[in-house]
Amino acid sequence: MTSRTHGSCLCGNVRFAVEGEFEHFFLCHCGHCRKDTGSAHGANLFSSGATLTWLSGEEQVRSYTLPSTRHARSFCSNCGSALPNVQMDGKLLVVPAGSLDEALPVTPDAHIFCANRADWDRDLQNIPSLDGPPG
Image (cartoon, rainbow, N blue to C red; front, side, top):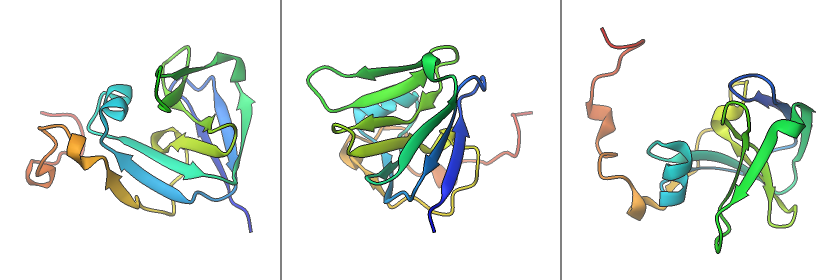
């Protein structure tokens, strides 16, 4: 049985579906992913067999490949949200986990490029957790 997963951007103009299974889910701490997200890591799902279908807003999807690297990202030109992209001449679908609208039945496989981890990204389980915005 093949699964179908839906996702969208923050403004809702771009919507998509992914048909198929994800083979890997990595939290990447490389400098490129940290710049892309403005956070501690990128959280991306990878599939060599799934297909991506744009349901709406495909004309608003922009892509950028960092020169002299394989690092690529797609995003909504209206709100800037990260969106799926196809890499390696169509052989690999990369889907930002945060762009999905449904719960994932999988957990990350691994943290990768940990040697590049941000210096402030340590022992985060020891800081307070709030269920909403601060006081």
